[in-house]
Length: 431
Image (cartoon, rainbow, N blue to C red; front, top):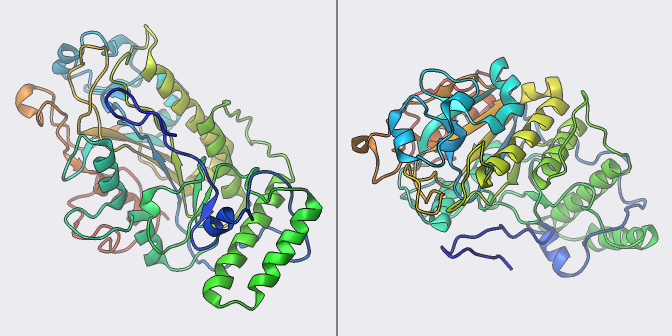
């Protein structure tokens, strides 16, 4: 069950189940696929299944990190050069002398220190005052619209599903949700995706002998089925064979990287495993929620919720980047949150639902070390009903990444009705 706070905001996203549309969902319901055990049998490949078949994709692996709950961009990428910031947040503002990489306007929260080397190297950056065209302070409405990314239309598919549809068939692992058995609604639609809590647990339940019989039975059952049934079944069996092969050898991060013992770090560790294994990963989604700090936001010198949560984020991303090393040249990480927080702190030492927010980007193609995008200012006349005014549509950020790093041409299908207004310069063209 999903618990809620007094404001009715979800404190945790559901994370049960093992799903892949058209097959794994049905298999799980029938008790065919479950938690633990091994894989084997002559019908399952002993090599990495679908590692390079069925795709000519040569763009970056896009990692979409969803900071669900309403990320406080003003606390992460602090507009210290705007005097209204300190006036609005007398108890929770980050002191200017503690900020990292400070320029005339912005500085980074000290909890982001593990990522400072990447900021200084120009592979970690941010865009501020990012928002939606039809903002909402409802978690559910804002998240649905962000992941649908088709305001004013009747489309019910998600933007990632439409992106995959434009590209055509890829491998079983082309679109993968890590850390949860439930795929994000940005994957809603006909394109297939894989969802798993982690690589090691994505396998049949039972012992090896039972698994061999299950694999053989499934293979036989679908051998003469129509292609609409046989193809997803074969893809699922191939995926299970691949994860079993990966799990058979203990994963050792490269370059001395040490992943913290957190759910987020474990999910990013699995992304790194899939990238290195060459299984045809194109987009990976990870949810890192619980950013809804209506109280006890805290500060870097007083502790508090935000400092601790941001430290988990920074530590996990820094380990991921270190592990991939030069492999980050083909990876772009983008954070998204349904909305930001109000400028003024509330009476409980926290912040309430707002609008404009900060988007963080990490990758070899990122032009980082700076904050991109127009800044509206925090003086009263510049605010949008007490919120940071959204100056940059989040689709502008995603669109630039998709076109420059992921080989997208026209975005008309991915973001219907949206025209790229300008280039932010947040990423370089992929050579």
